[in-house]
Every structure is written in C-alpha cells, then in structure tokens.
View 1: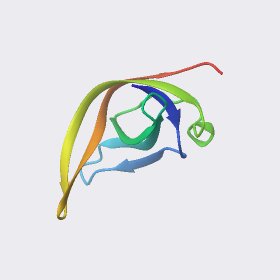
View 2: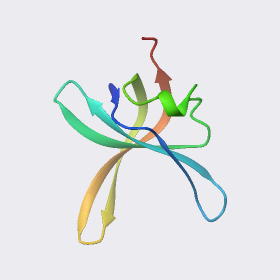
View 3: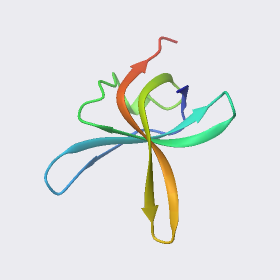
Length: 84
C-alpha cells in the first residue's frame, strides 16, 4: 500500500522489550485510513518529521479483536520512505 503518514509515528515497547512503530496511513487510492504496525527498526530517517511523508508499505493485513469489535491493521514487513 502507498500513502501518506497521517501523524507522528509512535514508538512502543512490549513487556519483553520488543520495539514497535505505529502510525496511521492515509491511502490515496480509495481514500481510507489504516493503522500500520512495524516490528523492529523501520529505518525511518527522522521520526519527528515523518508526518506527511509518502511511504510504500509491504506487509499483510491482520484482524485483531479489540473489546467488542474487530479492527484491521497493516502489519509491515518493509517500509520504503519516498523522497519528497
């Protein structure tokens, strides 16, 4: 999927110390928003300046149950940060 990062990526750690980056992706084709989850170091050059940047995300769609509803996320295998 390709699109623009809607907000500053959030870096979180699991209780075991695994690092994840989370951000909302605005997909232009179809005009929808999807949450992206990337494990490890996604090699984002400047996380503070990532909002609004164009990216291409390679990965798989996953469904997660959150309380009484299900959500769909994009679990990234690779993120390609586009040159502006």
